[in-house]
Amino acid sequence: MPFGLLKYGLNSEYPGTHHFNPATELKKHYDVVIIGAGGHGTGIAYHLAKYHGITNVAVLEKNYLGSGNTARNTAVIRSNYLTEEGVTFYRESVKLWQDLSNEFNYNVMMESRGQLTLAHSDAAIRSFRWRAEVNQHMGVRSELIDRQQIAEMIPNLNMSEDSRFPIIGGLWHADGATARHDAVAWGYAKGACERGVELHQLTEVQDIEVTSGRVTALKTNRGRIQCGCVVQAVAGASSVVAKMAGIPLPIHSYPLQAMVTQPYKPLLTPHVSSPHLHVYTHQTSRGEFVIGGGSDPYPLYNTRATLDQRETLTAAALELFPFLAQARMLRQWAGTTDMTPDYSPIMGLSPVENYYLDAGWGTWGFKATPICGKTMAELVATKKVPDIIKPFELERFYKYQQINEAGATAASH
Amino acid sequence: MKLLTCPLNGQRNISEFTYGGEYHQMPDHQQASSREWAEHVFFHDNNAGIVTEWWCHSASSYWFLAQRNTISDQILRTFPADEIFNQRVDFAPAAEVSSDATPATKGESR
Image 1 (tube, each protein chain N blue to C red):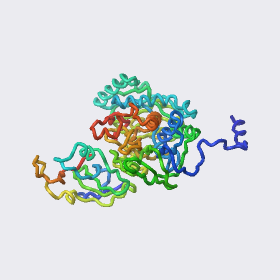
Image 2 (image 1 turned 45 degrees about the vertical axis):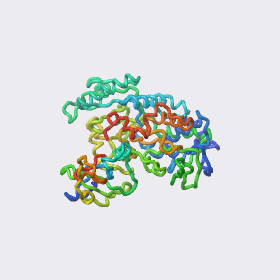
Image 3 (image 1 turned 30 degrees about the vertical axis):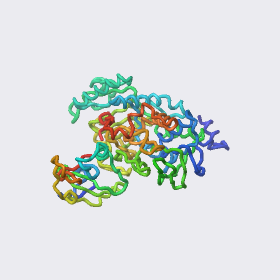
Image 4 (image 1 turned 180 degrees about the vertical axis):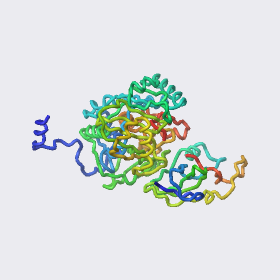
């Protein structure tokens, strides 16, 4: 549309309306303060404003909107988990994803291209069969497929029986998808701001005042604010922020590194993951191959990239797709993954009465964004924990009722 | 290549080592409540700053302790575990076992 573009460029009202409210002074008091303006934080704000009529809400972000793990994840959406609690939760999230662009009238470029997890051992086949049975029982599309089906589905995949770890089967998940991760935070933030929510970027929470088991105020670099309640949605800094409120968490924070190649013409439709080789990849709609893997070998609050991890990822990716040997790497980066002992999130109530946790999002946070926004907002508005997130309470660790999803994460960590 | 100084084997590539979790004191194994055990086993300080943690030189199975800055990834000091674990601990189910009971030979797993 060259004329449309020209007209837009010459328009005196350029650049048009802002998506988000411009920075204003912080108010003295908010009913709800959300710490962290990623997909989760803005999603919670959006649901509070649209479905619960709570608009005296501030979303505080120490950097800029969607600048944390929302921008650093590899944008995988799936629900082929192992436990009943996990599958139910992620299944509902995938359903919300499918209508998300319509929900807030912002294109998140959701593409349901399916996900294939590869088995290189009999043990993996056994666990895949288990997952497929659980998934089908819960209404999630998962099935075990053999070598021939894999070869037909992905002609470029190295199916040689002479490789170090030959592919012997796979778990095919037709509901698997990808979406543009930045757009999710933008869409939610736009919808929330239109309804009166305030987004405050470059606003860092420095201390949390707790008096007799209740949060009363937050100290930020822009002054002190009083609040009715607080939700923390700060993947990558969960322990650090919760500690300000005096809440210990069962989390270790590890970097997870990923990289992208130069663009290729479309040649890979589904997302392909190999837990055995610690690698997963898919081709973005821009044509780049995104390559990710397991977390770094030890905890760190730093998003530096290492040569070690680059070598490991590259070696594994080449084993699956030998043609990538010619590829040039465009970028390598890291996000911080808050790993919990059972590879499930920590959501809901905390020991502090009006302080709600949305933490422990390890390597599974992006896919849970919409369901998280919906259920956490419901919790804040009704003070009642929705059934679907009840199993993920912090208290489960004290009751020894972990929800083990270690085997169902995309790569071992 | 990042280097780590093993108290037994000297300076080696960090890929030769396995991270073994935060160092923290075990509760009294006779008195601790189930809640205290849960905190000991699952909960971590996860500090952004200087931490003390277990490392193992995989090739020689040698466990030791390190002080590391988890923001800058600088390793400040590594030292043998007997700097802290200098007393024999008796795990026999006797009433008089001391309260700072900690195994002297094994590292804690994360």
